[in-house]
Image (cartoon, rainbow over all chains, first blue to last red; front, side, top):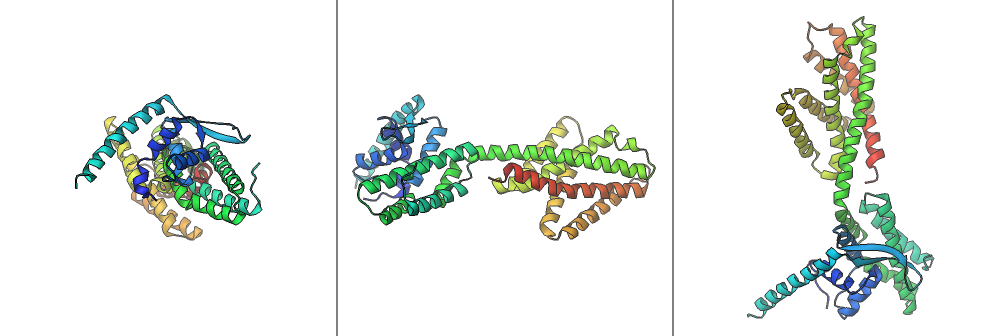
Amino acid sequence: MEIDRELLKGSISLLLLNLLSRGEMYGYEILQAAAVRSANAFEFKEGTLYPALHQLEKKGLVRSQWRTGDNGRERKYYSLTTKGRKAAHEYERQWQHLTGAVNAVLGSK
Amino acid sequence: MPCWGASEMTTAERLIDEIMAASRIPSEGRRREVLRELRAHVEDFVSAGRQSGRCEEDIERLLLERFGDPRQIARQFAWVYRRERAALHLGGFLISTVLVSLVISATALAMQAGIMFGFGSPVLGVFGSRHTAIEALDILATAAAYVGLISLGRFFGRPLAVLAAVAAGLVAVFVAVGLSPQFILFGFANGALLRGIQVAVRHPAARLGAVLACFGVLGAVFFHPSSSALASTAASWLIMGSAYHLMTHVAARVDHALLGRL
């Protein structure tokens, strides 16, 4: 199912932080991981992913490093900082609260 | 090295070029890094496409589909780096203002000294502390207003509002320390007038004529019979007009050199 851009927008940081909390990844890997973990429900566009990663890096939530991956290619790997790890927990907590509230409203018909 | 073929490279490179050209990322190093990252991504995308048995045309089409509108991506990058760009614009504005002021001050003082000498008036009058201080303030404020209108306008969209805020701040400082703010206000009005002439009058010779005419009128308005001869005052103001006209050219070049890529 295609998810509306506006709905996805607010959850991008949460999704990226959550994916990176499982280990460092480079851009292409993040897209693949998001698609696999959500059974293709989330298909980040490249144009959304990279500016979002740069924004998180500027906020100090992720750090990046160029290095050679298992496939022998130089890639820019992103990983969570301590601040990013805390933010991931906090965003997740807020998300659970929000979805609980939304579900309560939706289920109250 | 990228493993894509000639056609994908052309498509992908064009796409990445379009993104980079409109992204307005302020630092050259950061631009190179984004470029490298996007190229690495395309390399992975093409490689995965080939491994899954897709034909080159399919890969190319999917790549364009996945990336979407390059201007939209560029806008997102521009938004991410907006603060760095604002800082750079303000820094460039300050450096431009100081550089342009120094060039124009030196030019105006040298030319005015020459005119005073030619009229047989005391040359040192030009370098008198009060005269120099007033002229320096005028030039600084004029340069700030003019440079602000051409450079801040590109970034902040409302250059007059930004300049009015800067002028109000300077006036408040002057009043707070007991100095008269009239020269600052004159300079800002002067800068706005020069910019107005530059926008309204397209022909270079007509523009110079308009600037000189305005400064001739200002010279007549501010003439004090007790302090100097009419001819030397008029000549001094016309020289100032010429120097300010020169400023419009210097400012454009300095602005382009400092902020042309943003």
